[in-house]
Every structure is written in structure tokens, then in C-alpha cells.
Image (tube, rainbow, N blue to C red; front, side):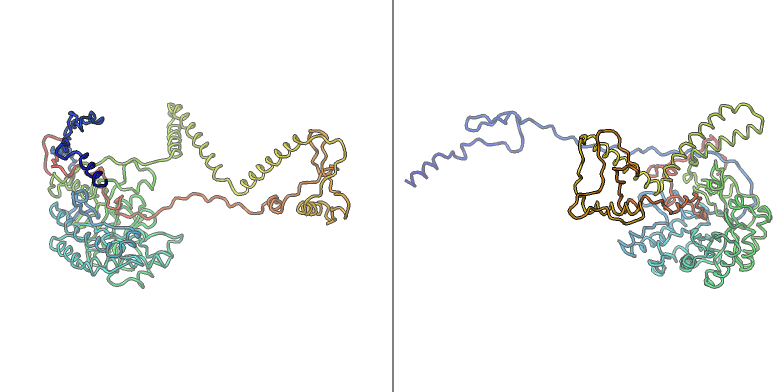
Length: 608
């Protein structure tokens, strides 16, 4: 039977040759016949059109055209070198590999990746310094300020390291600069202050100076490669700060540091008159900054009087004089706004004559130098390296500042006797009123002290208590007979004792005698009318607050400290002023990956 069953199973299976072949790769609309039956899914099989390949858009091969406006031709007796600070905007925007010397990182990255990460950045910065010097030589710029961010965290108290590992790269950059006759200087940040009263700041300043000396030592630079710093803050007593600087200079600096250190007049604390006695005593050269002297002039006289005195401090040490030039950003009104540097400089000062090197501290870096080259025809320029000047950014001023400006304009019109400012005056008054209302609202919000918060909390609790009492009165039914109150809990009895003692000055017990009913009076209500809650009511026991509530009810003797007046934090200006870490502004350079053509806006170009 088993053999017969298996034979029937084999005969029942259709042969493979008899089965229709299924198309595997291409689907068609023709149904496939499976043993004479049509598949219900056959109608869904349709031809799929071949996918179109995405075609890449051709890059725009048209050159980017920069319209370079003409400049006004001027004359100068300046015969020195013009330079710029730290960064070249064209090289920084070059693709695919930007060229700059200020690659840095954060401490978190350093802790994660290790110290070798920062050292590798330093080596790459040193190699790019050679490329920067070569570009400067091709464009007749032979004066450069080396970035202080060349070696990240090299002067850090915990992560600091020696530059011996990059001696080869630094020597290559120094040999190139000496062979081409380029002058390299540095300018540490505004936190390098030898006159600070804090010992930690002075120690960090000495480490920073040592780091800069290491760079110049490995590059093999001569005495003209100076380190420029500011005197720093006043700290409430200028003579004491100057004396502290002199002590730290003589006792904590090495001879190498003293040989390279120079001081610059600033725009807030120390002018030339303040620095000249100290520099003559310690034999320190002074870097004269025209912009800073314009903001904070010296009583000794104009630049024509100061520069001969300053040059003597350089000649005594056999160092070529160095000066700084910058212009305030257009639209500056206050002292703080005038400190901001403009993108270009419109002239070389008349007092800047002879063999002196002038550092141009402008936002446009090398473009500001090339513009002065064109103005004074100092050197021919390569037109493919020129870029137009971008529009200056407007100053952001508050509504209160605008209202004050309107009021000042009204006062000027009133002084001049003008009668056309009535509408402007009304508008200014409205703006001042609106600003005053906003200020009052902000002031009211800020001055919500702990006392007022406590008062609000008490008022809220009192409202809740009154609401609960009112609901209780509504729910109670009128009483027609004497009410025998239940025995209160131990906690309530204790509160009643404390309250009675506080009210009468005695500690007589209000508890009932043993076996007697409770004698604590409670209010009896015969109607829904309001109940007299005064202390003299014969059937009303005053509310017994808890210890915490009694403590809160006591008047606070804590004096509320007044809010400190907002004062503007003023820091010394760091002259690099590069904005971002790398100093490049996105709108200053465009389309470097295409061929570039620079043209003059005038049909006939004269000179370079």
C-alpha cells in the first residue's frame, strides 16, 4: 500500500518540462499561463521606462569681473616699507587649500585629541608662513606682522610646550625673510600686561613674551623684529601701575625679552606723555600709533612734535623705527565707536617721512597696502590681485541712543533759531516716551525682590483661605440649638495653647478637665451672614498659624541690595582686529574657483 501511494504521488506531479517558463528579467503585459489559469497579478506587470541619468550642470566658466575704482594721486616723502597684520585675505580664500598662519583649536579639542594635535597645527602654520612671505615678495610688500596664534596654546600654563620640535619650519621661514629683506614683528594680545596687580597675570605675560622670543630665536631674526605690547590698564592708580611695570620689567624679564620689547601708546589709558618718561628710563622704544593719538592725544603736542622724541628711543638701541596707521570706521561718533578700524586708509600721514616702517592696521589687510601703493605710486600693482572695498558695516545703536540723538539735533536747531523742527521734535518726544515706558517695564520686572515675592505668596494664600471659608459657610446649615464641639486633635490643642499664650501673655491651659466636654469655643452660625472675626468676638478663636507662617509674618529686616549700575567694560584694543579667528570676511572675496579678470571703471587706466 505504501508503494502504491508513493507511485501515485510521483505520477501526480507535473514534469518540469511541461511547466511554462517564467520570464525573470523583463516584465510584459502578456499574461503567463499557469496550467491554463491566468494569474490575478498579471495585469499589474507593466514596462518601466529606463531611468534617466542625472546630467551635471556645467560650471560657469565666465570670469568674475571686479570693478576697481580709480584712486586720487597723492605725494609723500615716505620712503620706508608698508606692511599688514597677520592674514592675507586672498590666500585665506584660496581653494582647495587656504593659506594662513592662525590655525588654532579649543581646549576641549586639545583634551580630546592630545597635544600633538596642536603641534601639528603649529607646523602647518609655520609652513604657510613661507608661502605668505613669497606672495608678499611678488607684490613688493616686505613688512609683515606674524600671528600670535602660530602655535596654539604654546604659552599655556598647563598645555604649554617648547617650539624646538618646529625648529626646521621656523628656520626655513626666517632664512627666506632675511634673504628677501623682509621685516617680521609680533604683537601679543591685550592680556599681556606687565603692570597688572595680579601676580597670575604677570606670570602669564612673561610666558607669552617667552613664547614670542622662541619664535624669533628659531627664525634667526635680528633686532628689528620687535615684540609690541601695551602698558595695559590703570587699575585706579596710574603712577603705581607704572612703578609696578618698571619693577616687573627689570626683575622678571630676560635680556632677550628686554632687547625685543617695545611699548605702544593706546587710545584709552596711556598716551605718549605717559610712556615717554618710562621708556627713556628703561631704554624701551615707543611705537607711535596715529589713530590712538587722534583719540587720546598727548599734551606734549601734535605728531610733528612727538615723532622726533619717539625716534630717539629707537636710535639709541639701533632699531629701525616702526609706526602704526589706521582709520576709524565711517559713521563713528562715540569714543568706543572711533576705536573700530576701517577697511582701508585714505592717506599716509605727512609726519611719516624717511626710513620708517609703517604697519597698516586695516580690515582689508593686503588690499589696504595695495591701495596706498596706487595712491602714492610707490610700487606697481598686479591688477588680478586687487579687490574692491566692501561697504562698511553700520553701527548698531539702541532706541534710547537714537532718541538722544534726536534730542541733541533739536537742541542744535533751537540754538540756531530754526523753526522747522517741530515735527521732528514731536516724533522725538514720542520715541522718548515709548522708550521710557519700555525701560520702566523692564525696571519693574528686574526689581521683583524676595520681599515682594513673599508678599505675593501671602496674598495668594489669604485669598485661598477666604475662598475656603466662604465655601464652608455656604455648605453649613443654620444651627437651632447649642452646639457641642468634638474634642480637637492634639495638634490643634497645642496651637490653641500657643496662640492663647501669645495673646494674653500667660500659658493658661484651654484644655477641658478630665471627663468634661470640650470648653474651646467655636463659632456657631445661625445664618449665612458674615461672621465677625475680630479678637473680641465671644465665640471666635483667632486663627493659629504654624511656626513657619508666624516666621513669615514677621517683618523682614534683611536689607535689599540695590542693583549695580551697568558699566561698560572697556578692554585694551588688540590691533590685529581680524574679526573671526582667521580674519577673513565672507563678502570680501568671491568666486576664486573661476578665472578672474580685474578691470578699471574708467576707460583709460593711468599708471598702476
